[in-house]
Image (cartoon, rainbow, N blue to C red; front, side, top):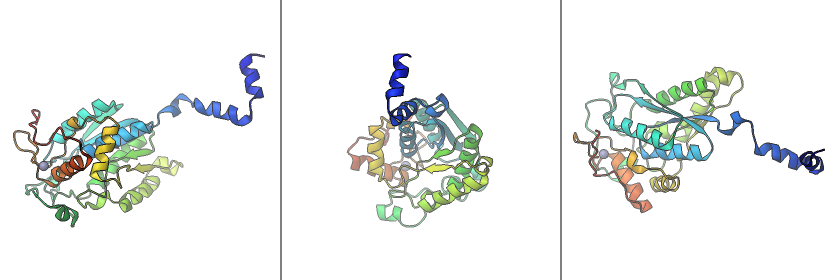
Length: 260
Ligand SMILES: [Zn+2]
């Protein structure tokens, strides 16, 4: 009998079991997950968290005709810098519906106070956007055998969008389990929103801890034609608040971006 086998026979059952647990089958090492990647700092931080948790990431961005298409370039840069397995950008032009300052010729609100941002649902809300996007992410997930979906929604320092709230996430998770073949066959989907209860400063700190390159992210809803963040829309305001409160310099605000 070899020394190895003798050791195993002498060891308590628990020890043998834990040794087996230390080396899971190859297909178990990095379960696939889909992340909705907008190119903003929230989704970048969420992606970094998912990677830290051991997931192999498949990123999905949506070119929905948004005013700030610059964010799609950021999404590609973030995906590359984090080393996701695949990054898909899906075209779905929501300007056909309009109804939002991000998809129609409506002014983006500027220079609003924190209280104004926190009050009500602003005109930058895109009707049912996260329902649409999560549905696409769910289809992608089912295709690649993933049951974990990540998105960077936040319900603390946010614009009051209803599809960023816990009730929405809970409802969508239930929907995923009854809407899919995988769910019907027993799979249980999980919607991960690790930033949900973080402040913007917490998110910046978490991103910094995980080595997110913030210079690759983009937040502004209404960049100038020459590619400079406006510094005054709600998204710029929340981003500035987060970096200031975290005591970390933002490499983007006010900087010209060549590839606009
Ligand atoms: Zn802005």
